[in-house]
Amino acid sequence: MRNVGLYWFINDLRVHDNANLLKAASEVDDLLCIYCLDPQWLLPNRYGLATMSANRWRFLKESLLDLDKQLHQLGQHLLVCYEAPVKAISDLASEHKVSLIYRSRHTGYYENQQWLALRKYLPLVQFVEADSHSLYGLDQLPFALAKLPDTYTEFKNTVVQLTVDKPVPPADFLPSSPVLQMDWLRNFPDCLKLTSESEQEIVFHGGETTGLKQLTDYFATDCASHYKEQRNELEGWENSSKFSPWLANGNLSVRQIYFNLKNYEQKVGANESTFWLFFELLWREYFQWYAHRHGKHLFAFQGIKQQKPLTSFYPERYRKWCRGNTPYPLVNACMKQLNATGFMSNRGRQIVASCLVNELAVDWRYGAAYFEQQLLDYDVASNWGNWQYLAGVGTDPRGKRHFDLDKQIRQYDPEERFINKWQGLFQNLPLDSVNAADWPHVAE
Image (cartoon, rainbow, N blue to C red; front, side, top):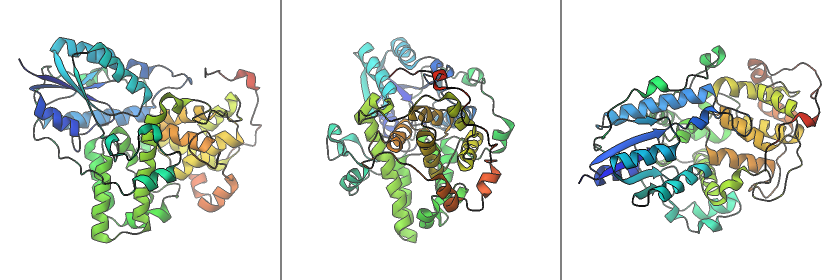
C-alpha cells in the first residue's frame, strides 16, 4: 500500500529551506501539495474591511504562480483549493487515504485552531510541523513558551547567542501527486482591481524567485553597512532591505536572510549597521513567539495587560485616517503611499499608528486591521504585536508611544518632499462632522 502525504502550504510559499517539504520527499510515495484559499477572505471581516487589498491579492497570486513553477521543476504541482482548510484537507485526506500531513508552524490563532480541528477529525493521520517561519525552533528556546520574557530586550539578551540552524537545501525531487494539474487561475478572485495609481507604483512582485533575487541584489551592495543610519527614511529602495513582503509570505526564509547577512559580514566586515539588521530579525522573532504565547489575546482591545486604552469610537476620524485626509500632512502622505503601493517605511508605520491612537483617539485594533488589509508584508504576529506595543497594551514597559508629528516632519521630511509627492497637504476642515454614536461596534 502506497504511503500518501499532504503538504499544506500557508506562510512558507517556497521550496528552499523548507525542512518539512524535504522530509515529505523522503517519507511518502505520493504527495499532495495544496494551498487553501478560504472563501471567508472574500467577505468583510469583523472590522468591516476586506481581508486583503487588491495589491495583496496580486502579490499572493504571483507567489502561488512562482511556487507552482518551482514545484513543476521537482515533478510536482500546486493544488489550490477554494474551500475552508478544514473541509478541503479532510476531504482530500479521506479520498486519497492520506497518512501524513505536513505544514510550517504558524503564529496565527485561527490557523492553529484549524490545525487542531484537523487533528481531531483525522485521528489516524500523523501531523508533522516544522519551524520554518522563525530563526529558532521551539525546542531551541532556552525557556518554556509560557515563560517567554516580558520585554524584547530581555528576550534578545537571552537568545542572541543561540545557534541558528543552517538553511536546508531544496529537495532534488518530490513524489508525484495523485491529483491531476488543474487550472486554478481560472477561479482566482478578480473582484478587487488595482487602481491606475497602484499599477504605476508596483515595485514588489511576489514569489520565491524575486525574493531570492532581492536577497542577492541587496547584499551585492554596501547598503547593509549603512542600514542603521538609513532605516528611518520615509522612502527609497536602498534605505531598507525590503525583504519583508517576501518574508511574510514565506517566499524568503528568515534563516536564509540571516546566513546571507553573516556571509556579507565575513566578506565586507561587521559594524553597528549589520548588527542592527540582525537586531530587526530578532525583533520579528520575538513577536513570532509572542503570538504563540498569547494566542487570541493578540487581538484583544486590552491586549495582554488587561488594561483598556483610553480610546473611543470615531468612524469619521478612522475613515479620514485610512484615506489620508487628516489634519496631519505627514500622516496623510504615509497613508496615501500605503494605499497606492502596499508598503510603508517602519518610521511611517510608527507615525501613523501613534496618530490614530493618540491624536485621533481611535481603537488601535482598527488600525491593525487596516494594515492587515493593505500591507504586502502583513504578518499576523508582527502586525498585531507591534500595534499592541505602540498602543501601550503589549510588551513595551514604557507604555503608550506618542510621537510629536511636527518634530517627525522636521526630522525626516524637513523640505516636505515626501509630503508633496504623496499629496499630504489637507483642507482645513473640521475633523469630526458626526458624533461617536455612529461608530460600528466590535464585540470584545
